[in-house]
Length: 368
Image 1: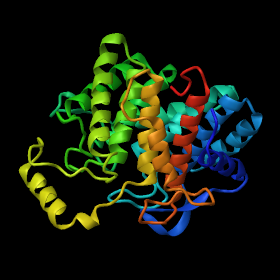
Image 2: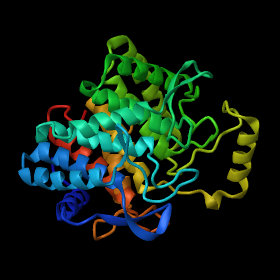
Image 3: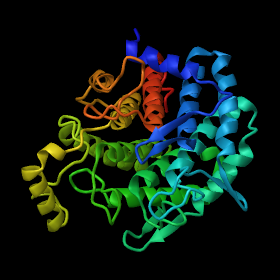
């Protein structure tokens, strides 16, 4: 497949990263200072992994080993657990708290590379899994298991819960049978809380629906489905595909980050009324979708094609949309109205594009 200019930019930028220096950057939630983010290293490592698998070039492996050391150096170690979080306080959490989503991203990067380095990261992986399952609880409302977002933020945030299930099941060789059974219960809980229209709220207490979180929730379910037996596989696939169809119909075509509820949507009336008024009087304040969100959307559709599922939206359409956010130097701006460059967004988009490139250049479905 002929690569376009954007994909060449991404690979060049990944190759130029100095593994002997920290990767620093600003974040949309912390703009005053350039900091080092575990999530960035996780996405870089996943990008290197697929480039290594595609090109069979040890330069990616050599760079990865140094960045793995950096990722582990940023971990939070407590008792027999390891986790990762943000380098700043966020909401009720503090920078020494771990987050479910940051930890599962880091776990995935380590699990992918572990066999290439003679399983020398096994202890870190097992301790990260211990920490994640320490967040497991039984949700009386849905009668299924769920995950808290962090020890301090005891809320089931569906994007993180879904990705945790998918990434843990993908790393099934490190799990006990009972842990796998608990994960299946969590997946069933996610299906139960899916709206009839196909979307998930951010959480029980937050009705927000946006392209980024919807994409990652679907990605987690698709990863889970790929590791489940036939009867469960079909049920989880059906839920994920319904979620993708919702995005295709209501979110990608409008390029608006947040979905605004209609009066016929099955959500609380006061939420629908608020969104109706917002659409009527404050349309200019709608936030356009981020490059990060389009990258997540691309990952979902790449997975669907890997599973051989026919979809109306073509990957090339999403690729062109991401390319519209590209600067001449290869950075991605926040969105079409905001030229800010944020390091976590960069790393996520890099990985999404490398994953896409790897899948499209290989005959096998190796992105799974």
